Length: 266
Image (cartoon, rainbow, N blue to C red):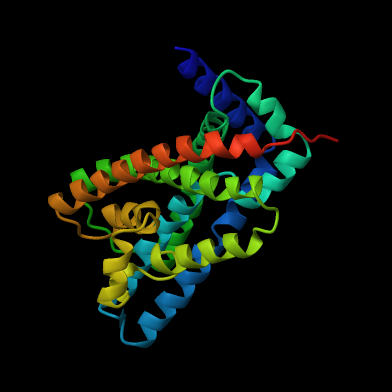
């Protein structure tokens, strides 16, 4: 019950904050979806120049993929690992440690609450993009259900992954190269840059055993692709596996990382 009340309270604060500064957050949301918008324009242009097809995908299929991508992008926003240095230096982590629950719940609850107004803000953008680019959608009822489950599971996976990455700052402050490498791998192997189906088969095989595609490509394809029932259930299973594995890793490294912590504050 304590966790439920905490999550409801933090999510309520996040929702109120977003609506209080709705213009600023609307521009922030638009900025976050600028990346998939660029890919959308590029790939639909390439497909249209090639007779409406590129890499076996129709221009409308690219449009569907990247329009859904814009929502998945906002859903995957979590606390950046680059922010851990400020979190420690400004004393924010100290106050988080005083609470009787693990600090990751603060990020899960607050950023989870932000998703609700983000989705509301995304809807008119999706309508406009659909009118301009004419996406082709043919999702199954199960695919739609799995999509709404998978985008939340993807958010949890990415939050845990970025937390594990951010905790490297407990041992060293020179971590930007490691963070950049991680995000470069995510860009290529997650389906962010290009749908994984267009990559070489060996790349697709590698991505099966990494968390990246389960936070981006899989949720997108559940509604923009033509996944079978077995593929949908397999994807959900892999997301649950990564959440479980990430939770174990988080508990293991957190106990050791916190031993390196020195309280700092301005």
